[in-house]
Image 1 (cartoon, rainbow, N blue to C red):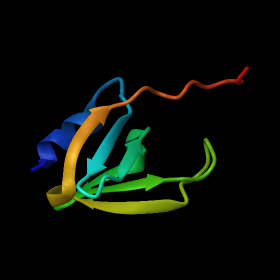
Image 2 (image 1 turned 90 degrees about the vertical axis):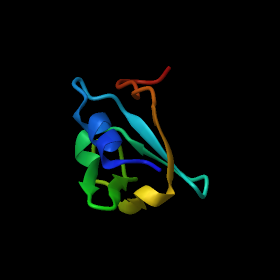
Image 3 (image 1 turned 30 degrees about the vertical axis):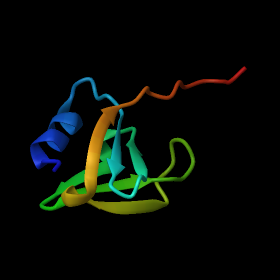
Image 4 (image 1 turned 135 degrees about the horizontal axis):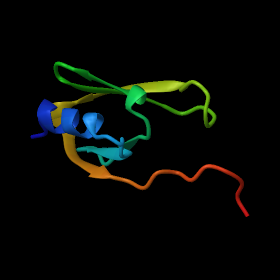
Length: 82
């Protein structure tokens, strides 16, 4: 089972490294900024969706009991695509 300490470690990394939380249902949630996630007693609340740079449109309350993995992901590159 996932622990709050593992999640806290990912959120406190400096510089921040984006990470993905995978759940027992197979869904995954990307945390690309430390302000997009809040630790709560039984897990993590993740804000997601919306335009780049704008406010998130959705949120998910992820329970520790259902988290199966936390993994580092690559940061998105800013700027124009070619």
